[in-house]
Figure 1: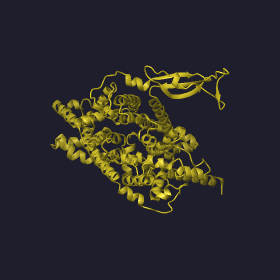
Figure 2: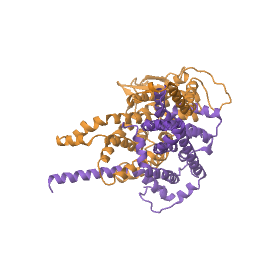
Figure 3: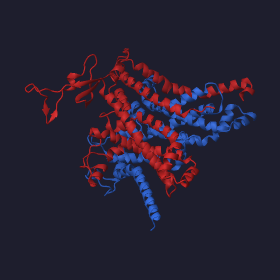
Figure 4: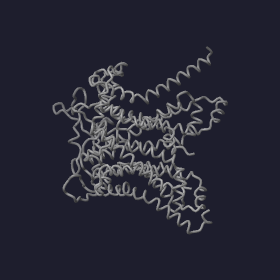
Length: 355
Length: 282
């Protein structure tokens, strides 16, 4: 079509287009491109905040080494010198502390995890155990919350796809968890999950005969991640349900009617019609939420503070609390690369339509 | 009762039970926040907690409203969120027009670039933005606003270009035949037509900006007066340093959520459209 247009006009159109794009390009250069370049540049230096010293030294990949160095060592059993047999305390085998086992030079390692396997005791040493744990926690958080949100979201969407009195109101109410400020919902949950019976859940569970009324949802290490996941699931499940509802709405009703006439059960109708036709919508929602969950910050920072980190809250804490600009920048770059992998697969799936 | 009728009854009961569970699940935290905010201080720290306030008191609301840093936070948030929204709508409408209606070389890469930007992790530029802000020497509130464009602008451009593309090309041609320049047809013909899309994207951008915590916390670390509402609520402390004043925090939570509830009820159709627009291909 453009073949018939005068050349000059087409050139004018392109010029107008770029002029129109200019403000957005300038803004993105200031808030995204240049800062990202800065972060990469800072990540190979030992820059720190609030020091009088302006110059910073180039340290190569030291920051990355400090973040990512890992080692697995065996912890030898403690042997009682008198009997020559492995020492027992309270009926449990005792092992050497990792302090003497993990290397100290050139980088000092500390234990990130300890575990038993093959009848032996092992320690995972890391130069930044907090970062390694934050990475593992973030991945566990992401997998669980996205999986639960998808399943619960699907159930809610299926319920809401039926016609019933009050459906419109319920759909509107579903926007509330999405709209509420994450910090606010985090603090409400924090209050509901207090470790004594001043909290709602401890009171309720105690009244139901579950728990002793002193469950430390944020204090007990093994309960911290499940609690974070539950808080995130509450906030984002309605959003997933809305995406699925929109997907369900475009499935032609005739398909279900035909299947029903053929005598297909409800389960069969779901697996043979709903799921395959919803697959694209589910895939998009999954990746979208995964990208979001991987950069989780608010709930971890508000509720757990310095006790336990997500990747993002670790990076922020290193920058602001420890003032280690270089190290924080290296962590930023690592997160950026992780998210890039997911984002590329997302874009492949969306297949940008530019016609 | 016949077997079939009984089965139908069982199914209906199960269905309404599910609806009830969903309703309770959605609203429970809001219920608890309101109930807690209305309790007296003595009742708040009583164990076991009461499911319903025995004595309704507005003291928590009074002290939150009298709290200068909370009031300042609300003001800061309103200022930052609305300026970020307006700026991205203005800048985004230009780009949306170019990407959605005009033909030029480099459009496809630009579209991919914008889409990539919508997924940009904020934390990846944290230290770099800090450096930019120092370089520009802007007041904290302005720098927070600027930083918010990182996530409001790409999203605005993306939604608006899709909308502009949906407008018939004949509109632009007709305007040009009538002697309008490209900019005139943009201002007087196309932009008025995009008003609904502007409202939708503006709403979503505003909610995102109102919600933001990472940048707000980081860039106001030294300047307390620039703290936004999420930061104020996260760092809320009462008169005693040891006990968190949860009654007041819940009152603050309720107050901050009311405008959002109003927005949701007034604009729910538009918000749902905006949220699900990208996920389902028309």
